[in-house]
Amino acid sequence: MRFASLASGSSGNALVVEADGTRLMLDCGLGPREVERRLARRALAPADLAAIVLTHEHGDHADGALAFARRHGLQVWMTYGTWRAIAADAVPAADVNIIDSHRAFVVGALEVHPFPVPHDAREPVQFVFSDGARRLGVLTDTGASTPHIESMLSGCQALVLECNHDAGLLDRGPYPARLKERIRGGYGHLANDAAARLLAALDRRSLQHVVAAHLSQQNNTAELARTALAGALGCGAEWIGVADQEDGFDWRALG
Image 1: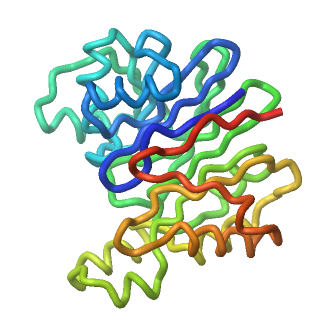
Image 2: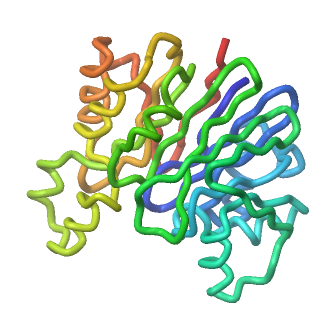
């Protein structure tokens, strides 16, 4: 089992998870041609994908999904709330599968376990992916942790974890007060220190990879995110990976 990011941040998100020949793309917030270009960086073509799985309807996660799916004949999996939010924009239908936010489903060799998160979207979820032996947990776009989130992410071999902003940088930054409140609120995004507290609360004994993701280009730095998560793990900051907007991150394998 392995995973790689095509892009991570407020300008577009996409991540690929692979197990035994099955490849899923989590979110598609880039245009179809840009997704094709970035897949090629990871030695993939659209035909190598089995489906797209969406976390929620916000543009940086979903804007390219239906167009890319129609173009390449892919299924798209999402919650009913996400579908209703996208359908409200009168986007022509693709091959859509509606998921229950508490019920796992299977695509090829991958088991996909959704879980609800507090975020300002219609029915947002995040996911744990498993090949039956190993588990990758992905958590971005949540305003806070919950006991259920911690239960879902405990014991994973890899985590892609939101470190959206540094609280001090956000407070001192140029954003208007209303936007700052949205970001730091309970339905916004995780700050570095909140992500570190979440990580510290998990069962981390099986962790092989931790990647900080969805970093704000205005209100965070890779160094601050790494330092926060490394403090929770008691490891060197260099062990923490960082997903960025332009390059995402290259393939990481689970042993």
